[in-house]
Every structure is written in structure tokens, then in C-alpha cells.
Amino acid sequence: MTELKLFCALVDTQAVFYVTINGEKTVYDLKKAIKNEKPNDLEKVDTAMLQLYLAKKCDGLWLTENDVKNGVSSTAGLTLLNAAQAPLQDAILGEGLHEPSKEDKVAGNGPVHVLVSVPESVGRTPAIISTKKRKNLAEIGESITPSLFKHCKGGGNWVKRLKTLDGQIECHRVDRSDGKTPIPIVLMNETFARFQDNCQRIEFGQEDCEFVTELCGGLSTPYDSKTIFAQKARELLTDYLFVGYPSIIRQATVDGSWSDGSYYVGDTLMFNLTCKLQKGDGGGDPTMENVAYYIKSLPKVIDRQYPCFLVNICGPLMSAFGIVNSGDEDEICEPLVVSFPLLYFYDESMLVSLIRMCVSLKTAVKELFDVSSGLQNRVTCVPPAALDRLRFPYKDSVEVNGERTTFQYLEVIYRYVFKARQVETNTPCVIKFSKRYGKEVHEYCSKAGFAPELLFYESLPNGWVFIVMEELQLVPLYKANDRATVRDQLLKIQKTLRDLSFVHGDLRENNVLWDSVKNRVVLIDFDWSGRDGVATYPPFMNTDIAWPSGAECGKPLRVAHDEYWFESIAAQLK
Image (cartoon, rainbow, N blue to C red; front, top):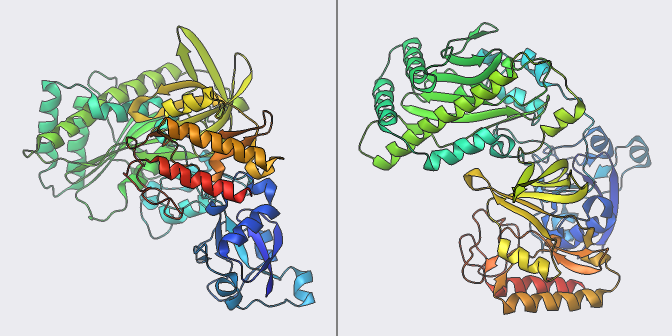
């Protein structure tokens, strides 16, 4: 039997460690060995969710200890070891492991064999904080020019800039080295949330229908001149969106670049328009051009959010994006609605959707105008807490029976889950946002004593749910002192859920934990939970997970699926 001594490193750290493992063991066994070696970093990570990469570069050379110390933040070009049952002697030994010379070891040129990545959706403890100096948005604005930034090639292009800024300008076009999932823009700003919700249901009238008829007629006709096309778009949008306002959508010049249309309240940009004669006409990406104008418009001292609508019209195709800063170093831009063809033909459903989008945009720009107008001429003061608040979702309070409870966000746990505290009582809590949630199952499990108490639950605009629950001191099950007690509790929970036809749906090991204070098994993450045969699995399930048979996107949850997970966990505790 061949013993392998494999040097490993976590992405975004400068530390190298090693594990010793038999070559006949599998890739999954290696994941378990790595997790046991780095418990402080990986205790909250499901073993199966660890991603292992063969740390061999395209030139056939291994990464070195010096490479890791200089910072390895990307796995691009490396081979993912994604076959959990593959023997290590086949997956790694065949890659030419060799003992480095003493000189290479001393010089830090010894090989690193495995790079370990943790998907951001899983989280890692503690968070690794990059020491790389980040530019603030004012510095970024000084370094970009809209006429250059909009292109994907050449000097100053957006591709190169976004890669260099590494997530500070988040447009979902370039991968971040940290793999983090940004908080959706509709959770960062309530105006964008209401806009998106209104696009589905807002009422409209004859005036709105007439505007859409005029918009389609005015912009679907071919134009020879982009200047005339943009002028027509400005006139139509001004007469509908900004009628009665103190100004109109005007061209604005920035660093020698002229926008196709901008609306400012004082010095605050709240609407920017970019036009192209047609898709594929050249001249760069209209969204990136809009992004550049937004960043250039930001003040040198940022003390609040600066939300702005970015509208693209490419021939007969109209798109609406939202953009907002999340501090003085980062911003996020996302589409708020699908793009609409500005073609007047008999498809009532499509035309009604376009009407609702236009009415929603009119409502939203009034919100932004009112807020921005009220903030003009105020004295700027930027306490650190004010900037820190911008990193978190807008929703920070609930009102029940006329009594308001306020929350302070403290840190991101992972994805859309946050550590927080109730301000009035200084009580720690956990806040979560989800597009679906098994409230009934969570409440029952909490009352039965094997889930955190569900403190507040509120539906937000556009389908998101705001959940507040108690904070518990949770650790992996293997840290419990008495495994027999854990198995007994698991069997009781399993029977309780089965008898009620409740299905949790995602009982992987990182969702079944041990309450180290009350000495009990606790279930968390009830996003998918529901009744057997009634609730269904969501789209885009992680295909790297060995789900039980029948657990597939869109298929019904079954009690047997939970039994699969309970049996798997119990087997690991023997």
C-alpha cells in the first residue's frame, strides 16, 4: 500500500499544510482528511462540498509553496478532482509525485499538490480577509473613461478593468477570485425591489398604453443616425418619465465622452441612457458604458447609497438595469427585468409586460427623485458605521401589532444569511433571505425542540422572504461527546417528520448540527421544506451532490429522501 504525503493549500490563504493518506483511498476520503486537518477553517463545510483541484499548472509544473505565499486566488486552468470514488493512486499518483530537493524545500519551491476551494454558498470559518489594497470608487472613477471602458478590447476596456478590480464592480460578467455570491441588488435597495415587483402587477391606464404605442412606433423604425435615434429616445422618455420635473434627460459630458442621456438631481445621477442603432452594431457594450458613467458620477466622499437606473435601447430592444454602491469601494449592477422588443404587434401579453415595465420605471424614478431631492445641501458626515451599513440588505426592521423591532447586521455568514442583533434588546439573532421557505416545517421543528426558534417571518416585494431566527451555538455532529445520544435523537426526529409527512429536503451534514449548549441535534435551512408529495425541489440543484433517487429539480419531495440522509448521517456516527 502506497502512503501519499500531499501538500495542500486553501484558496485565498498563504498557508501550506499536508495530509498523509493511503493511495488506495478515494478523493472523498481525501476531502475528509483535509477537513480534519483544518477544523477551524472548515468545520461548517459539508465534506462533499469541498472542491479539490490538482495543483498542476498548464506547463506541467506543480504550484510551489512560494506561489501560495504570493497569493493563489483562482483555480482557473487546474483540474478538478470531481470523481468522489476515484482512487488517489489513479487521480494523483499518476501525475508524477516526487520528493523535492533540500534546497527547493528551504527556498520554498517545494510542490503543492492539492488546492482546496470552498464554494461561497457554503461558507468558511473564519472568513479569509484579503490584504490586497482596494481602490475606492472615486479612485476607480478617475481611472476609467466611458468611451474606452465600454469596449471588450483595447486600452481601458471593461474586461481588463473588471478582472483587475476583482469584484469591486460586480456585473456578473467576470468571475471573482473569492467565489463570493454578491447580495442581489433587489435586497440592497428597496426601490429596485418595488420596481421588480411592480413589473408583475402594477395597474396601468390609457395614457400608459398610448406611450408604449408611441415608444414602439418611434424607436422600431430604422435610423441612419445614432444621434437622431438617441435624441428621439430622450424626448420620448422625458415626456413620459419626467413630465413636470424641473429638468429633462440631457446629454452629459464626462472626460470627453458624451452620454446619450442623463438625469441628475443636483450632482446625483439617478437615470442614464445608452442607445445603439441595432444589436451587433459595434461601438461597445451599452451596459458597460452606462456603468462607467455611473461610477464617474459618484462623489469623492460617499456617505450613502446612490441608486440609479441604467436603460439601454439597442435598436428595437429596451433593457433596464439597476446599479448601486455598497460602500465606498464596491458597486453592483444587475438587470431588473427581461429585455423587451419595442415592436408593436399583436402579442397582448408581451405588450402588457412592456407597459408595466414603463409604469414601474416611472414610479421608481419618482421615488429616487424624492429621496435625492431631500438629501441635497445636507452636511456630509461619514461615520464608519454608516459605510458599513451599506454592505447589507435594506430590510432591517419588522413591525408586529404596532411595535417595531430593529436589527443591526454584524457580518455575513454565507450567501444570504447574516449574523445580527435585535437593537432594542441587544439579543443575537440570525437573519436569512430566501425565495422560498418551509415556514410550517420550521415552526413545528422549533416547537418540537430540534430547530432554532423562528422569531419573525415576512414576505417582501418580488418574492423574497425575510426570516429572523434565534442564534444557537452549533457545531458539527462529530463534535458531540456521546454519539449514541446523537443517533437516538436523529431516529426520533426522523420518526417525527415521517409521521407528519413533513420533508426537510436538504439534510446534508452541514444542515444537521449539534447545539453545544442544550446538547441536542438541530436542523437548519428549511428553504425547500414542505409536505410529502406536495412541495417540490427547486431548479438549479447542485449536480455535484449525491442526491437520493428521485430528488431532482421540479420533482416532489418525498419522506424517503429524508430517510436517505438520516441513514447516511447515522452510518457516519457508528
